[in-house]
Figure 1: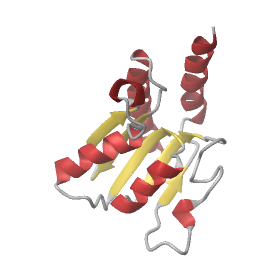
Figure 2 (figure 1 turned 60 degrees about the horizontal axis):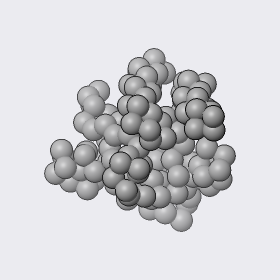
Figure 3 (figure 1 turned 90 degrees about the vertical axis):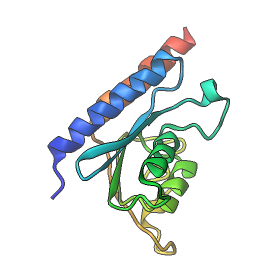
Amino acid sequence: MISEVSDEIWMRRALSLAQSASDIDEVPVGALIVRDGQVIAEGFNQREKKFSVLSHAELEAIQIANQKLSSWRLTDCTLYVTLEPCLMCVGAIYQSRIDRVVFGALDPKSGATGSLYNIHDDDRLNHKFQITSGVLSNECGQILKDFFRKKRF
């Protein structure tokens, strides 16, 4: 059984990773991958730092997990991310066979797990993954609002 309490604990850790992104002037999104109750990978947005469109928090964490497990398959893993994944990240989640994704804030402009698309639930694909949304959504949304408010002023 999945515990809401443990989801909140892991999301708080993802929020601290989002803060790490904000501290280096990156959009504050943090992600981590958990397997058997242990963090196996962490990541945060680094698109500006690495000059790479691919450096989303989820992809950073997935790459580290692949290396750590010496496998492209991340079965039995849960990805925690502060913002709803985009199409690119959902493609990587799907390809890596992650079993579950937990996210905080919805992304109405590019979210692919409920807001704009429901890739995780598409019967045409050969892998489905569970979604738990809204975990610490206020905190996850607020860090983004604060970041962009500072950018505007």
